Image 1 (tube, rainbow, N blue to C red):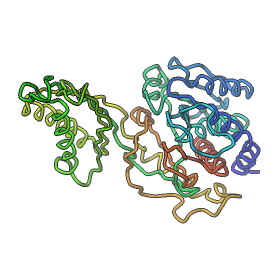
Image 2 (image 1 turned 30 degrees about the vertical axis):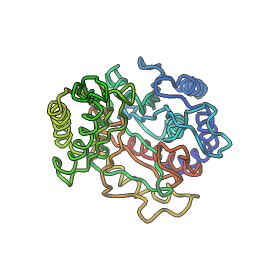
Image 3 (image 1 turned 180 degrees about the vertical axis):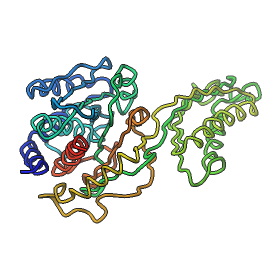
Length: 398
């Protein structure tokens, strides 16, 4: 029996285990940097499977290593563990038990899938060489857990390659890969407008911070249409605005929170510059002042072209193995040149350091990610396992 057939048989044997762990995590979602129950569950399973692990200095992350006992590459496989502050509105029998918290982005699948892939590779050591490192990462959604784990020494021993997968509300069995930059730079800005309080019966004695904020919002929305190349996708959104104490008082302060996304690093810098110029210039022109506090956040995910070429070849060669026992493959199951996404992902920190690839896997078009009705077709969790395990197995046998 060749190694691909052995892999498929192992995945079939592990499928119920994966779903069991996934449902347990889904029922008990935890927010960023609070995934302690999830981490403890994974730690217990790693111990049971005989896979050595260490606790990351970035709590509650875990790092497990599987050594084939033969010299070869060091491959990192990453899964994220955190959920979102979303109230679940599905009828799943294993829906969230934690009020206001939900796995609305599939991280429950990522974590259970990574555990299963590790278990399978551990029992198939004779079929590959080198070492595989499993990274169970906290705080992808909020807090940059990937960045913090790297700062804390995750890559002190530099791996040869990193791979990650993400379930996606797309056609079942569709793999979206691509080469080069794949997601957006995602950055935040706190905009604080300073005015002067006055009674609304004597507006000439004050400077209305809320009015200034309103004009700033209108002006900010001209950046993408007038200051950036139309070919470079970008987005700017003022998501919150707070100011004022009473309807008959001119506000002396207004605070806005802004999110910026750019696919192009040059456009990103232009947006930073124009936001500051518009905010400060508008406030000054209207008699007030303004502070801008930028938070440079997640970098764009970069898919190394050489690694991507290897994965494209692997998934084409083993198409029948990927879809064995599932529905027929979509005609475009392996997208060759997908558009760059405006979504953000902290896997971008991995790609800044190591040749990496990040894959999106279609698991059913139920509802958008981060939506209270988000769901995953559990039949295609096995497909996710096949994608990651096959990629790892073949990479370690290059």
